[in-house]
Length: 217
Image 1 (cartoon, rainbow, N blue to C red):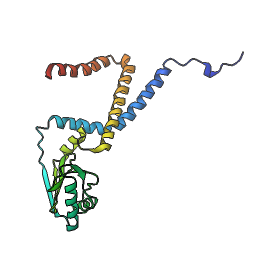
Image 2 (image 1 turned 90 degrees about the horizontal axis):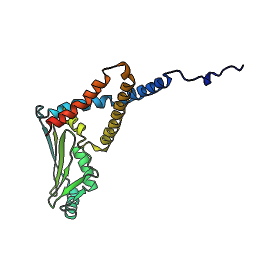
Image 3 (image 1 turned 180 degrees about the vertical axis):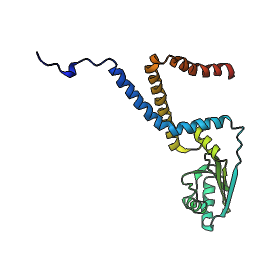
Image 4 (image 1 turned 30 degrees about the horizontal axis):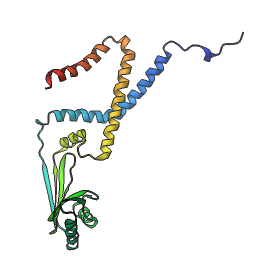
């Protein structure tokens, strides 16, 4: 009688469930690791945004002034005539002077032109900034900072944070979905031995729905 091949034996009961559970746990901890810092930050800033009226921000304003060199004033006058009442970047030579004088990069940033000056809005998370250069050569750069909490709140909202942070928010959202879905599936596999699973899950779903229906008008 030929010897039986171990590979021909039927899978042990629960083997498929164990493999499925192991895979879910693996995806769950990976997504949890990816979400850790982001989840802590978004949770904390969710609280600070919800209590923004009680958390006072004291803006700090810093202003710097300088005079545009005479050779560059001609460039400014020509650009002001060419782009009056329109939006266009500063002349490259003026952008270089701004970088050297004020330590900011305005390369490719559109300025709002008038016959008298160019105004460059420079919004940023946690504050604001702007640059004004007149055709007479007077230049002023002002920065407003509202503190670390305001900065974190703006990161939460994606306000003036640029495309890279926007990509991070998208990736973080996908990781949170993976974390939540795998967590739910793990709960489902353990629910038979944990009678309180579905009542707790049901409460977590029903509570916010009822609050929204009954108290939000």
